[in-house]
Structure formats: C-alpha cells, structure tokens
Length: 346
Ligand SMILES: N[C@@H](CCC(=O)N[C@@H](CS)C(=O)NCC(=O)O)C(=O)O
Image (tube, rainbow, N blue to C red; front, side, top):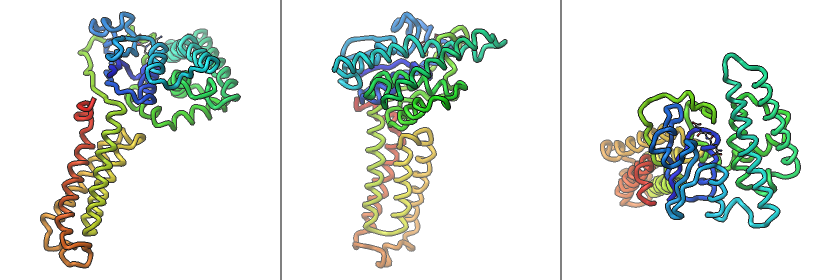
C-alpha cells in the first residue's frame, strides 16, 4: 500500500496519474496548501522541504519526495513506463528532468508573475517567453514521435499536468500543433482522466512553489481516503451487479424491468470515469427509479403486468422481479458508497 500526500497542483497530479497508470493501490491524502497544511509539523516530519507530492511506500519501507524520484520509483516498482532498454530509458529520463528542472519551475514563475499585481512586465515577459520557448522545444520532439520520448513513459506523465495548467494560465498551444495532438491523446487515457479527477478542486492550479507566503492559519484539512484503482474496480463491479439485476428482471414484467434498468444504468453511468464528478446525481436518479420499481411491485400489485400473463415469461416471474429489484437496490447502494467500503479490500 502506498500513501500519497498531494494537493490540487500539477506536481500533485503527476503522482495520481502515475498511480492510476500503474494500478498500484494507494490512499490519497489531500493537503490544502492555501491553509498551510504543508507547513504543519506532521507533514514536515514526512517531507522537511514542505512540498508535495510525497509518497510513503509501506511495502518498500520508503518515504519519497520530489515528483521525479516518485515517478522513477513507481516505474521501477511496477515495471511500467520506464523502459529498461538503455536508449529509450535515458530519453525518458532526459525529458523527465526537462520537466522537473525546466518547464515546471519556469511555468511556476510564469503563473506567479501572471497573477502578481501590480504587473511587473519584465518578470512576466521573461517567464512567459521561456515557457513558450520550452513548448516549442517539445513541439519539435513531438513532431518526430507520438510521445515525448518515443514510447509513452513517465516523461509524458510528468509533462501532461503542466501543459494542462499552462492552457488554463492563458498559454495558447495554437502554434504548437504537435503539442496539441499529444496533449489531446493523453487526456483521452483513462488513467490520466482519473489522475486529474482525483485532485480536482474549485480553486484549480492556484498553488505553485511561490504561493506558500499566502498560507493562512486555519484548521488542518481532512485527509480523505481515496483507493484509486481499487475504488474504480469496486464501483464498476457494484454497478455491473446492478445491471445484472436488471437483466434478471427481464424475465418478467416490462414496467419493473424498465425502472430497474434505468436505475442500474444510472449507477453504471455514474461510475464511468468522465462522469465521476456527477456520480451523486446519477446515483440519486438510480435510487429514484429503483424506489419507483419497489412501489410498482409492492404497492400496485393489482396492476402488475406479471399477473395478466401476457408479459410474463415464467409463472414465478413476480418473485424474480422482486429478487432483481432487491439485487439492484443493494448493488446500486454499494456503488454509491464505494468510498467507504472499497478501502476494506486493500
Ligand atoms: N521539485 C518538486 C517541487 C514540488 C513543489 O513545488 N510542490 C508545490 C506544489 S506544485 C508545493 O508543495 N508548494 C507548497 C509550498 O511551496 O508551500 C517536485 O517536483 O516534486
């Protein structure tokens, strides 16, 4: 098990994307940088540098700070995303260092001076121009291959959250067609979507190396658990179970079948990656439909289509419908509560 300490920033997202890509089980502890969580003694004991991301790999007995080191360690541990072939490996490491030593710090400074008031033109232009120059370097490399270092690697993972941040920080990629193509292909990857979603917040990307001065003294933020891949699997299993319940109901009456199917599909849709933020809405709709199914079967018995014989496939179909309803209700509830029970399966 890996504990990840991260915040809603590009460096934090490198770690969530990597953990999602590798499928290694992890718990996410979100820090609120604007509240100064990174300066609290309990966090400084983990990383005296007071920066996220940090992982604690309990199996290996290691605590690791610095996103480049974290990505390298997770690549070694999982055997993924860092080739053992010397030329490919060094190419990936070269672009990883390009990000941690070049693009990341320059983009951080650019964002700092972009928001600084009064505007300091010299500093703003200096960092914006350097960021644009680095984007042009990437564009040249991406003209020769689909990914920054040939095959998809930890270098792409390190760069992608920064490119997303730059887009949000008014940097246009219109002149960088290869960067645009590469970025769009990355953002279609399930693990990247989940890696971003894990650290989504209303106050996107506002924290950089330079923002700690603004830290407020407030109560420590809670450290919610996120089971990453385990949770994702659990959600899908639970929602798929809901669909199975609906299929069972298909042996019977049309109305309960439709209601249960809609409910179960709602749970399933809510568990899909891109719709994860809207999951409560889908689960809510699912439960309403399932409740309607219960009402139909238990309280409007006289009108049950099962009993008129025409729509029933088997004589015991009413029992089947009831069973299917209960299965669906339980499984949709499980889908709704994965945050609470998925960690039990670590
Ligand atoms: N070189 C470090 C940089 C880490 C870093 O700057 N993290 C920022 C968030 S993106 C941070 O923790 N800032 C909080 C602070 O400076 O107080 C890495 O690559 O991990």
